Length: 120
Image (cartoon, rainbow, N blue to C red; front, top):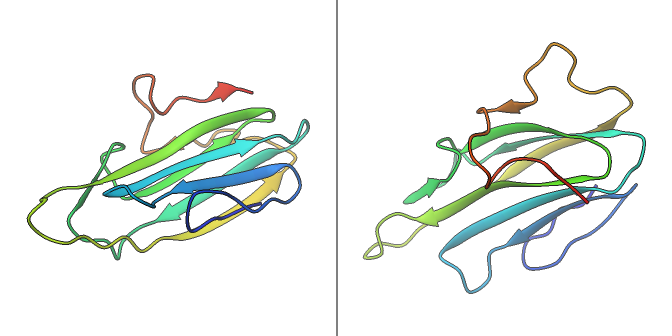
């Protein structure tokens, strides 16, 4: 899998995590699973952030990305422009043969079009 600290990415086994955090007041994170046979599971923890708000309503997320799909995991934006902000993220990810099964595929649940899973 891939994690980048700026525009761009690193890759492994057909999965990438793209982060855009240069020249923006926040962070945009996209996950792409180009693996045709495995599910990509990613958990993001942004607990050490300050003065940001998440489009998912929480700063900690967990998502299952099906084979040959992509998803905007989260967008964090600066809350108060008059103050600085800090984003500190940690990730856990794995490629799995099986999908989420009985488990919900997204936590928090995905609502609307911005964060839904799209085919490649």
